[in-house]
Length: 356
Picture 1 (cartoon, rainbow, N blue to C red):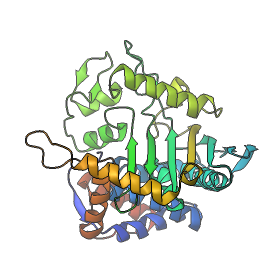
Picture 2 (picture 1 turned 90 degrees about the horizontal axis):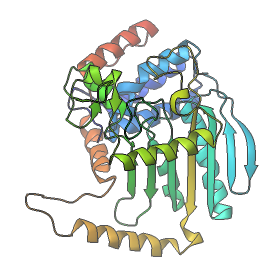
Picture 3 (picture 1 turned 90 degrees about the vertical axis):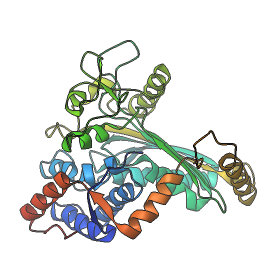
């Protein structure tokens, strides 16, 4: 999980209100600001702080203010069939394009059973699970994936060729919580390295390499070097597949063709590609039958025999749902260096950052 290790606690709604004001102040419409804010705050609530305001807000604001990302949405459906669509985002905010594409996938799946949509010429879309989870209230299985600037070398290499290229799958349940698998194809997201560097905290062994491919625990060295893929060569294969689906299939950037990482590149559009899918469960069986079977399987997994010293077996998404409840009750931790950034941003925009 990509949560921060500590910080000053802030109520989620106070952060939400401030973030939405900030985004509107830099030219984002009220509706788009609400959507973008919700995706960021939900990431923080679920403990995915690398994709919440903790890491992304100042970067997003700076890119919008410099005109690298368009504050105004301009989405065009350029190809469409009964169960597919390709949407040109024309450098709009990534979350806006993602919401539109996933919404289209859900509506199409109501008619065709399964739908697959994609966006091109888009931007960073935040937490992958946010879009996959949109399918859950509709009794559907959701999927989302996106590519990113290169930070990982192919197996045997030391040149960055692939991004963290995350994907998420959300599966509805009945009485149990939904299954929500959300992961980068690297051991940790690059944002986790960024947050460690900001706090001068050493990395865990196995997270990253230096520029020569030598393992390192120095976050500053890692940011100049390479991230470790999950599962060695298997992770390399998955991130390649994601890059081809999200980048090549959509006509967006891929691999080494990105103009740089978000915080480092304040001149050129990123040109991200993302894909989305919705599977209507009732195309295969009655929804109550499916969710009851999912519940049964989840209980079997969680009550299976544990190894010595293990108190509990979790299923994907369970920790995040519990983290969300805890942070709604007790607040979202913001590291002190990030608080200072928010205070400075608030002063610059005449929107004071709230008290803890």
